[in-house]
Amino acid sequence: MKRIRIFSALLLASLTVPGSALALGWDTETVDTPGSVGWHSSIALDSSDYPHIAYSDNTNNDLKYAYYDGSWHTTTPVSAGQVGDYTSIALDSGNAPHISYWNDTTYGHYTVEYAYYDGSWHTSTVADVGTAYANTAISLDSSDNPHVCYSNGDLNYAYYDGTWHSTAVDTTGNVGMACSIAMDSHDRPHISYYDATNSDMKYAHYDGSWHTTTVDSTGDVGLFTSIALGASDNPHISYSDETNDDLKYAYYDGFWNTRTVDSAGQVGAHCAIALDAQNQPHISYYDASNTALKYAHRDGIAWYEEIAVVGGNVGWHTDIALDSNGHPCISHYDWANGDLEYAHRLVPTLTLSMNSSIYREGDRMVLSAHSTNPGAEVSDAGFILYLWVYHSGFHYAMGFPVVLTYDWDSVDEILVIDPVPAWPQWLYGFFGVLGSASKGLFDVSFVWWVFSST
Image 1 (cartoon, rainbow, N blue to C red):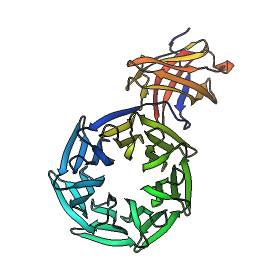
Image 2 (image 1 turned 180 degrees about the vertical axis):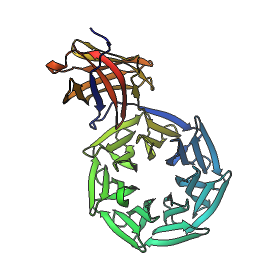
Image 3 (image 1 turned 30 degrees about the vertical axis):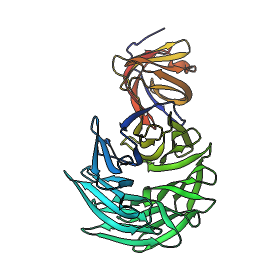
Image 4 (image 1 turned 135 degrees about the vertical axis):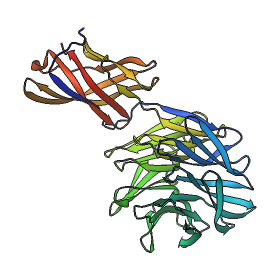
């Protein structure tokens, strides 16, 4: 076994993840526990990546709000009457919450309500919808003005510019349930929704006038929908297929494209979608077969699905947001315990410092490294180690698959690349490493170190 020795030749190396589902863990937290709390949860992340969640307190029929700033805080913005169902949250440019929700204070007569916080909570009525009862969703424009979709048997849209204005978007049949709204770069609304009359998933957008279209009509689809806008303001929609108990996804690139994402068991209800910086979709949803929270994402090539949280009956009323590194953060309801739960990807970061060591041990390359997330575990054969070698004026590149494993139960442990293939004959001797890489759910940074390959 040979350990670090200083030498001047240079090897530039990076570890990348080609999209395989990693055995990275999820961190789960109970946010609120008294009574039955957490229905219709809706999540948004602030500029510091801290989560803010709006949700319903079914025990007390209240609207509730939770936020994290190093610890969780919960509050009741509205408690008068029967309020808080079908919540939706958005944060403005100052990280202040704006929430839409239902009010059933006059039993059987509903209103759509709006609450926002500017040091104290303020509420106003968006619309009186009579005896109809369905969800709401909110999005903010570039001036932080709220825009809300809701249903009373029709799909309706409302916006605020000092007063509330409301208009019917689609009145053909019983439409508008499960609506989700997003504002584009020109402050124009885009809405996905369910057509209960025809069991179809529909989409509406405004460009000076309203346009509606049926995106998917194969079976009973769209009972749960969620929309996000990508590059060129093109819509991406997650939705449920009730006929086949599947999770589906649709996107528009000049034409509508629909895909079945997950068909393993009874899945797809309570779905929500977010897009990363590469316009790739990430979806949270309920797995009824395993009574679990499930998560799916696409890396531009393929879809990957995994159970994020299992135990009891979790994963109801999910919503998803991505942090500034593209990592998923999910709010959901634990039906078994009646709790609001929060789950986020446990993403380890490996940092190799000047006192890190790397050495060859038989067929293994071993790195003594430092973890900023002790307790994380990874074992995956999908890593590719790419080597860019500069040696004696020659440039050589090679890439090969490796099994990368680590188990950071303490802060400093071992990372293993096994096996290491034969090095080029001229590479034997000593060389150094410098570089950095970050992709998907794994982040690696390299600094100078030198080792013997023999």
